[in-house]
Image (cartoon, rainbow, N blue to C red; front, side, top):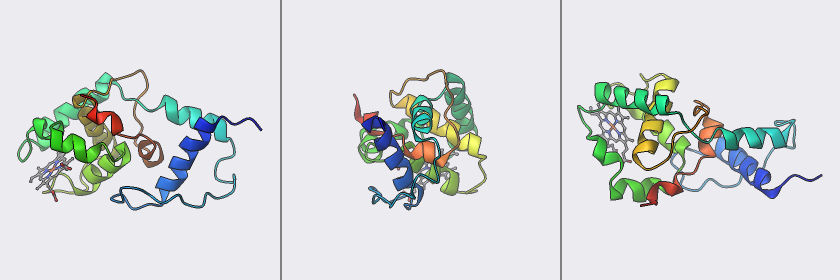
Length: 155
Ligand code: HEC
């Protein structure tokens, strides 16, 4: 068995986050079900790491959705100011996704398609200095939960 410790760490984050409530800042490490849930642990972890990016296209579509549905109440600058960075640097992309998908727009919560919510997360990540990449950010809570936003305080 030579699973690199990094993979174990990522898998731990996935299992831990899966059953934590979205607003909990630090999900307790859940007892991971014995291997059964993840028959091929190493490739899955690699997949997660590879997916930890979004495309330029996703961020652009997120910006379009933002302009159409969010500017009635928000300035985009609200999502990259120091207060926002401070708060969200301690959370994950999954937390942001969940908030947007379940409570925004405030007038019609739950109305966004999962893809739209993930595009909005991409747009907000780009505003905060995250670089777009070749692979798309999936609308997959497990993957999103494994993506820390700690780099958001980078500047
Ligand atoms: C009708 C007004 C309204 C619209 C439209 C709206 N929001 Fe909000 N949004 C709010 C309010 C009010 C809050 C603050 C809620 C709170 O603090 O409890 C908020 C909070 C947020 C937050 C959390 C900000 C933080 O500092 O943590 C995010 C992210 C967000 N909105 C994203 C969106 C996105 C994306 C859209 C468009 C799809 C959107 N909102 C549309 C009213 C709105």
